[in-house]
Image: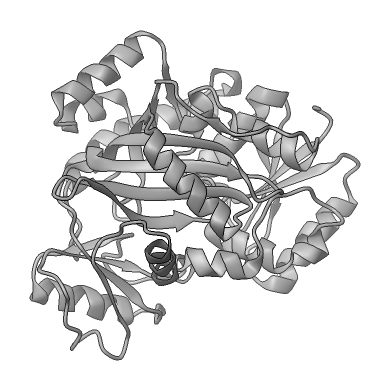
Length: 405
């Protein structure tokens, strides 16, 4: 089926990746509904900003905006959340939107049970999945909290949506405190902002960025897993807002891990896209889960690029109602959002670097934000500037997860 309109919530690199997936599979241009227009989707033939509504995250505005838009359309609409906050809104208002859109989304309580990191770790414990030694602190007790592990300590928000909307000097997506002094400085800064929810405090799992793993899954309306794809990040982004995002990924396969994560998703009754970040702990030989995002990941285009188009699984489930069974991605390819020169300079593992070079030479390589079918002069000039800027940004921020620029 090609006579439908994808409606994507957001305007970031994740949205562009999903728009590429829809375009490459069905030849359709997506419409984006967002609260702010970001450069990743600007000057594109694959996606256009249909509605720019600064108050989109307000419940009544969210519903009215989407319903009014749907009433003006003549084609079937496939709705896709590309951010945690939008998934929560979609889950909360699924009954009001169901008459107008085709979508896959868990019920609200399931989203809240797993998107809040402290709740997610409890679910991991209940399902026998490993995660780093973890504690929490609040605005009231952060100065006196005792850690059940030694420094260094990872500090990150429990409520990602609330943290996204706060502001303070030297803000980073994730912090690493080397000692108690740095811990106090970081938590003081965070709680001096509008963010007042819990903070997750975790032991630091040693190892380079390439010890990380990223897993993307699609679970159907039948609450069964239909697709799973695993990636091995080669390098993470280094900017304050980009820490934890991936700069390059190799698609890999681990049947035992996929089986365990499939059982988890089906046990909790997940519906729609899910994204997991984890790290291999060489001390214990286990994967330690960090978080679950209630959406496809920002780097999830690596799944489509490796031969498993994310849009296909969604459309065949919610629009065509096909039984797609269960698929595990097992091809090998290289995905990048940073230029290859940055990967070559900062990736320390010679074996992984050789594999990346081999895949690049073989043409099994895709870039998140560069698509030949989406060439416009303005977009191409922006792309070149942004790629050159990666060298400067990476050199400036490499390894910096403290309260400084």
